[in-house]
Amino acid sequence: KYRRELQLRKKCHNELVRLKGNIRVFGRVRPITKEDGEGPEAANAVTFDADDDAVLHLLHKGKQVSFELDKVFPPQASQEEVFQEVQALVTSCIDGYNVCIFAYGQTGAGKTYTMEGTAANPGINQRALQLLFSEVRGKAADWDYTITVSAAEIYNEALRDLLGKEPQEKLEIKLCPDGSGQLYVPGLTEFRVQSVEDINKVFDFGHIKRVTECTNLNEHSSRSHALLIVTVRGLDRSTGLRTTGKLNLVDLAGSERVGRSGAEGSRLREAQHINKSLSALGDVIYALRSRQGHVPFRNSKLTYLLQDSLSGDSKTLMMVQVSPAEKNTSETLCSLKFAERVRSVELGPVSRKAELGSWPSQEHLEGDSPGSSAPAG
Ligand code: ADP
Ligand code: MG
Image (cartoon, rainbow, N blue to C red):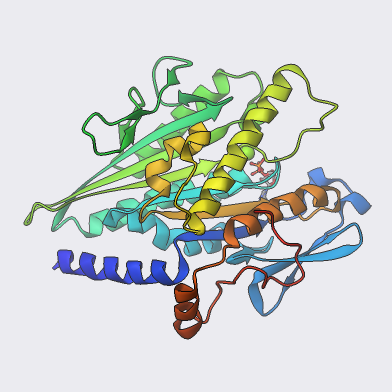
């Protein structure tokens, strides 16, 4: 019975992908905070349309620039509201899909708030695991599921285990020897989690390790990518059917451009590595979305590690975080241009026709976005 349901869902999914592609780009605008200060630099520079939740407007240097994404969340959007929009993506890994959710944006724009959240108001990571547990429990009559969690960080193009016992392990990404083309990371710790308490333990451990191994966590976390990798393996007891799905939750390094004159030494090196990996990620998503034959996965550790979860029938969500404050509009503009670039891809004539015929909603075609400058690429 479930198998049939699975096939049906796969069919629906394939149809959806054919029409819309499997990459979504959302924007989330954080509220103005105390840290933004007072006075003109803390003035709000981002506005929304009452009747269109895919559009936002940025007032930059006296000019209004508008952007259309797949969806935008205004400052008052709650963690629940945001999660509601991503939960279908999360649960699809139970059916064997690989999923990536990225938080992109300058330091202070709300990436960690969206992914980790606070104790009182948890973000996507915690909610996703909780939802996976409850969904899996609901299928326990027919299926056995195992959920494991790994946590890693990429700093200066070095991959490090956040759950391993040894400090500062440098890990390599390898091709599976079975010829399947799959990638794996020998030595990356995988914890089996069976309850919400287990998850909290894992999160605390990873966090403590990260804190104790660097002198300034805030600075460090803004210069490294943090990954939480959840693997869901299922076995249908009656038919022997097996599924494996992976959910990759990624809090990216800050996208801010480092002043060319100011940075030197290690700071400059960090900035170059971040720059390289974020543009590599943008290039990969752009290539996938435009269905280019060659996808440059190998240009960074991040894209290479996530290759399996970005290609094929995988699903990707890019959550672009921005600050609404006047003083941040240059970076906000950059982040929104990045968002537009990865999502503005011209679809082929066939899919365009199908799209216009039977899918009248959000997807926009290149050049359609209101008033925005043309994205590079
Ligand atoms: P980043 O990880 O991008 O550097 P943070 O997530 O640390 O940014 O957010 C910076 C500050 O703004 C934090 O104090 C955070 O609690 C707050 N913040 C971010 N987004 C929101 C939001 N949607 N609602 C309330 N506070 C937020
Ligand atoms: Mg952060």
